[in-house]
Amino acid sequence: MHERSSVAELAKSLKAELDRYSPGGKLPSSRALVERYRVSPVTVSRALAQLAAEGLVVTRPGAGAFRAETRAPATAGDTSWQELALSADAASELVPRAVDASGVLVTLAAPPPGVIEFNGGYLHPSLQPERALSAALARAGRRPGAWGRPPTDGLTDLREWFAREIGGGVTGAEILITAGGQSALTTALRALTAPGTPVLVESPTYPGMLAVARASGLRPVPVPTDADGIRPDLLEAAFRATGARVLVCQPLFQNPTGALLPPDRRREVVRIARAAGAFVVEDDFARRLVHEDAGPLPPPLAADDPDGVVVHVCSLTKITSASLRVGALAARGPVLERLRAIQVVDSFFVPRPLQEAALELVGSPAWPRHLRTVSQELKARRDTLTAAVALHLPELALPHVPSGGYHLWLRLPDTLAEPTFLATALRAGVTAAPGRPYFCAEPPAGHIRLSFAGVAGPTEIAEGVRRLRTAMDELLP
Image (cartoon, rainbow, N blue to C red; front, top):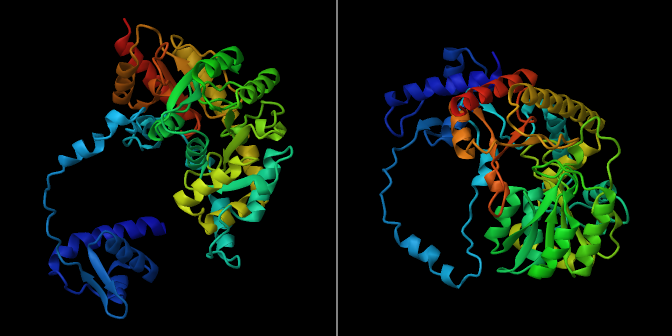
């Protein structure tokens, strides 16, 4: 039997027997448990560790395991005073800092059993390089000083690797290692503008960034996009109208539209921001999620930016695992010192074992193999989902089929209310990401985002679309 299932079954059996022992009573020895349940000593040790972590037993080296003392039930208090305390300063705040994390949580929460997850924000376990990650972490743990304190800016070799990946004139000295892309975005927005001020964003855009901006007391101002990304004419007008000093954009496979900013617009965006005396935060989240048929990718905006207009954000998380939270901020000029100071105050540094493991991973032969595999698989899944939507859900408009990223952005018919459709779909056994959180103002129509990276494969994609059809048939006349 698999070791993990053996541990779970033994822990379950031991829990069922705990009532036979009084609080503080000694459980049978490990040797006795090995003989009774016919399992290995390692299984016994791990099962007892699981019960100890749940507060059910206490283990004492050399003495054995004992049933934990019964805890007194928690006393219910009166927390109503907090409502006033948390809102006391709201009247004086230009932008209230109440945090709405719903747009982020919808891609992080695990769905109920049996529900097909079209709302995921990460690769399905079958696409993650689990063996390579485990091997990298094991090798990292054996590196000299692996558990020591790292440099606050990050390991030199890892900073140099990110600089080479960005290209152009970016150097390792202009890189800060961050705890993933979300942390980098938070640091950048806090560094570049003050609470109460506007920040320009693409419309629609990533809800996690909107949440960061609002939690920092900033006022997101939408700049409309089209099939080629953010519109330079409206961007220039937005800078003039608002006096904003920051634009956040995703030039490559924009989330959620999948748009790829063409060369002329790339130059225009940087030129317009430079003329306005503003920074561009480039969220390059999808560069390693390119599809096999995409062709050569344009370099990051930061690769051709001698004036330090662009603050670049990238991460290893999306292409590996949600738990490998290692990313980078790239900037040049005085702003780098401000970014560094904010990051140090917030988190000191990224844990060294994670940085060492990231270095081991990207330097291993498994890394390019993994990138090729994901590139091929994402294209195949995109094609499968696109064909299934066209055949079975023709009422949904798909204005753009992306060549990178992990999702499709679909417009609902005007007669189909977004919340109602998603609730009906969930009852049918499938989840999708709602479109509303991607807009910082009133959305022009209802939308959903369907992720094809977080599901098991083509069979699950087909079944998920079938369930969406069931939900739509229930609602449309």
